[in-house]
Length: 224
View 1 (cartoon, one colour):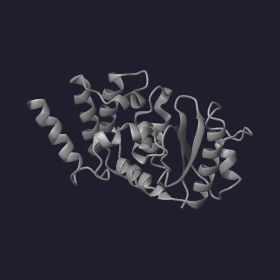
View 2 (cartoon, rainbow, N blue to C red; view 1 turned 30 degrees about the horizontal axis):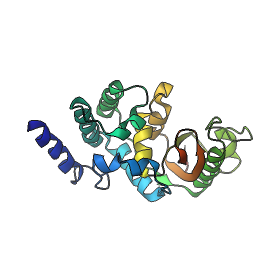
View 3 (cartoon, rainbow, N blue to C red; view 1 turned 90 degrees about the horizontal axis):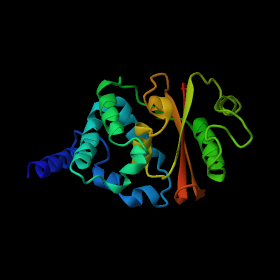
C-alpha cells in the first residue's frame, strides 16, 4: 500500500507544475509506441524538454525516482532496456546522482543553419546506420560540416540518437547515455558554452535493431 501511494504521488507530481515535462507521466514516456512508432521529430517539443532539463535538472529526479521504484518493486517498464543498455540498475543510480550535482545551464535557441547541418547528418545516418554516426558518408567531421555551412562557429558539439523521433525518448536516451564511454551525449546536453542548437530527423528503414527506426541529430554551437 505504501509503495502504491508513493508511485501515485510521483505520477501526480510529474503532471503538476513542479515538473516542466509537458505533463507526460513515466508510463507515457516509456510506452512501446513512443519508442517504435514512426514519430517525426517535433523540434519545438524537443527544445522545450531540452531547456527544461538544462535549466532545472534537479526537477527531473522525480522521473528517475519513479524508475528506481519500478525496478526495486520488480515491475520495471519493458522499454527501460533502451535507457539502460547493458548497464542495468547502476546507471539509474548514476543518473540520479548526476542530476543532483550537475550545474544548470542557460536555455538554448533554435538556429536555422545548425538545423540544416543536423538535418543533413540525420539523413546521412539514416542511410548508413552502422557507419560512425558523427562523420558524414564522405568522411567529413562535424567541424568541417559546420565551418562550410555556418559562420562564426565557436564551441560546438553533436548528439545522435537512432531509435525514435519522440522528443521525450530522445532526451531521456541522451541523458542516460547507456554504454557510451565518457557520457559525451549527456555532457553536451549541459555544456554551458552552447547557446544554439539545430534539430534534424529522418526515418531509418534499415535500423540494425528495430528494422524501422528514426534518427535524431542535435547540433550545438556557440552561435548567436
